[in-house]
Every structure is written in structure tokens, then in C-alpha cells.
Length: 133
Image (cartoon, helix red, strand yellow):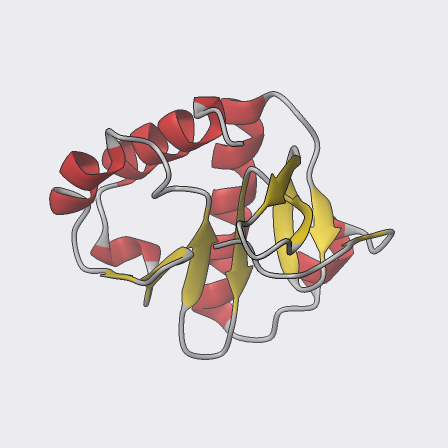
């Protein structure tokens, strides 16, 4: 389920530079490089989420909106990763990712050192290429 959120004009690099927690900041810089490489696009801010691309969603309830195709949000306690669970291949990859917790709309990691970055890259690739509708 996509959060209800709008794309903003905030600079993703400035947002990442403002992160005080050293591990979250280093992880955000790594995710920025990784998602830039996979998507070939520049990121944008969606609230407090650094995101790439966009898609339009509409639920049976009639609720609709736009959201990033893949992205992340660093918080004080963990990093939330978006758009990595929608592909049919995601379940198998998540089993080998490493220490994480999956919720309806995102994957939570405490720090990137807890996960396999190769598997994370594959999750980003399949998340980015997955058709949403």
C-alpha cells in the first residue's frame, strides 16, 4: 500500500546531509548511490522519503495518488525501504536479504551492515522494473 504523499521540491542531497545519526547518514549515502545506479534517474523527495520514479495507484476503495517506484527513508531507529516487495520475485530475495522486517508497504533494516547488499541491489532492480497498476 502506497502512503498518501506528494513529491516536493526539497533537495534529496541536502536532506541526506542533514541526517545526524552517523550510521543512518552513511547508509543513506550508500542507498543513494545504489538506487541512482539501478534506476539511472535522479531522486526526488516524497515527504521524508528519498524516491525514484513515480507511478499512479488506485485502490478499490476509490483512493488514488502517486508515489515513488523505489525509495528509502532514514529515521532515528531504522531505515525504511519502499517499492521492494511488489514484484513476484521479491519473496525469495527477501528470504536471503539478511536481518530485516517486512511490513505491508516497506522493508525495515536497522543498518545496511545487517543485509546482503547484492541481494538488496537485486530487490531494487526487480522493484524498479515491476509494473504497478
